[in-house]
Amino acid sequence: MTADSEKYWYNLTTGKVERGFESPAIDRAGPFDTEEEAARAPEILRERSRAWAEDDARESGWGSAGTDE
Image 1 (cartoon, rainbow, N blue to C red):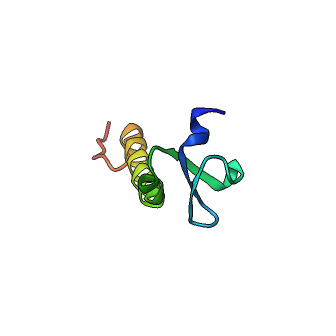
Image 2: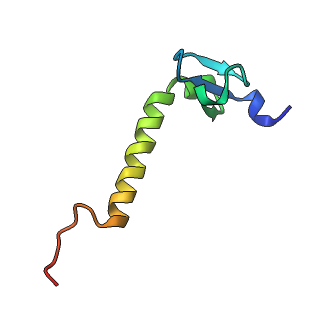
C-alpha cells in the first residue's frame, strides 16, 4: 500500500470525498491530506488553475503594455 492510498481524494464524477483508491484515477482529484481539504477540491482546483493561467500570461507577456520596437 502506498501513502497516497491512505489520503483523501475528490471524485470528480460523484462530487464525493473518498479515502484511498476507491474510484478510477481519471475520476479522482488529489491527493489531499484531510477530508475537509478534499471537500474543497473544486475551489482549490479553480484557484490553482487561475494562478497557473496568470503565471503563463506573465511569462508570455500577455496583457503587458506593448512597445513599438
